[in-house]
Image (cartoon, rainbow, N blue to C red; front, side, top):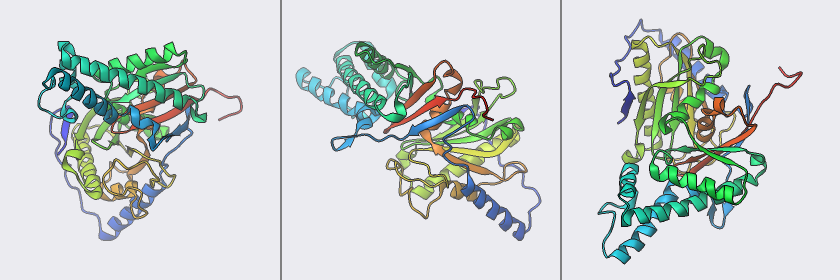
Length: 384
């Protein structure tokens, strides 16, 4: 199901200790469930930054503004140009595979050959750059985005020559139109940004006592789980935080039901817990879970989960609690599962490198287009 990156050594289950009594197990399970509900979930005001907003949905005709700058939108643009060039050339310049199945590496290779296929890709990239520039301008007019000086483009799209070129072109279009905002791409790998950001959301006192935390990034196509080492004592701003080990499941290929997806996440986390135990990594009893949608303070979801399987907004479904019920304790403490929006978490992975601006934001190019905006907090006299 899941592919393991970084360290390829397989993890074994931790040795079972003395079995607790049934009453103790029930008491612990109840505490786990209650803790999963308490959170905190969806914090908007952190020690160093204020999250001004996220999952901003701007309507444009029958759809949303962000939809025109998603990875899906780029594929539609490319498919349209591909058909046009096929009709002109008399044969398909990109081969037999449907556009949606062409990998980033394949598109980069076709672009490098500088043939008819490259012309189609360049035309689609120009269309995408224009749409991205349009989306940025629309977002900058919103209250929570006013004054944003820098936008980080996350998601996996930028990790290709095609994607990075289209984003760079969008930046030039904005500059030509005298829009004073800088576009940058996420410095971390797209599989890791949504994990690393959790070091800025976890309780600081907790991080002081442990080496690492567990983090999860749930997307419409993939789910990623990882062990994130803070390196807090080497870099107090956690600019050196890194993913020691990660697992990735392309769940869209398997088409799991909602509860099967949660069960799969729990299984991946159990493997990581066992690995940390074997490698003597001191894990904090804390798991950060990033997912699309609006996060309610009690840990429920209130919209924006349409790309996930099943109904994630049901009153009978509570992701932190349901995950807690499936997981063992981590170390001697009770495991706390906290929930936040995926664009927020990916954006927070950039926080140590955003200290030269006051207002900044993130756009995550994936199945949809995630977004979040931030204001750095400066020392204010009289504030604790």
